[in-house]
Length: 233
Image (spheres, rainbow, N blue to C red):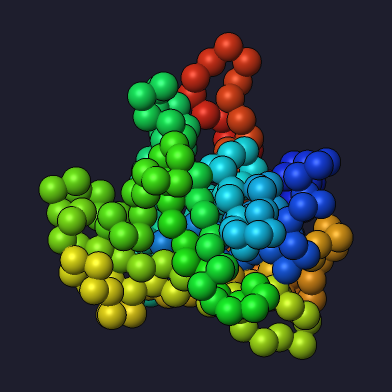
């Protein structure tokens, strides 16, 4: 599945503009929610703004069919119904209609100093002014969004495997944008490198972690149909 996600999101004219540290396929290691793989390379990087924009698109996200033996927090969020609901909720944003444009994600590295060191992660519906994640609070309940807020970051970690091999996906929660309580953070670990090759020992560790548990992804809309289709591997 990781190899398929890499190949499907390596788009000519797009892939080459994304910085090497952000290319490849990443394992959401330690993520308590039942989701495993993510791709950032199918997006646009703006050099002047130091900003990466990635859409929620086919082969961009990978979910587990079952629960790995060493799933975080005992696998409490890996129940099949929870994983399926989470995937459908995320993918449901893709077909919300013209009045509800699909979600895109922005990684703003401009405030982290020189280089790709630290980014604020936001989600947007439509243009960048319509932020639904980060400052607006992503609580799932519109009445609480101005009160219960979260801050999401992506911070580079040193690694002997090279720049961009390990990132810290920081999550802090709080109230009224005063987010100071760490909750749910995890690591973004590269398992397929920028050239499409397994990055060891990360790749082997991921395979061992998954065991015989399969993965599924959204592979696109069936011709003439609205429902999202899934691809297993």
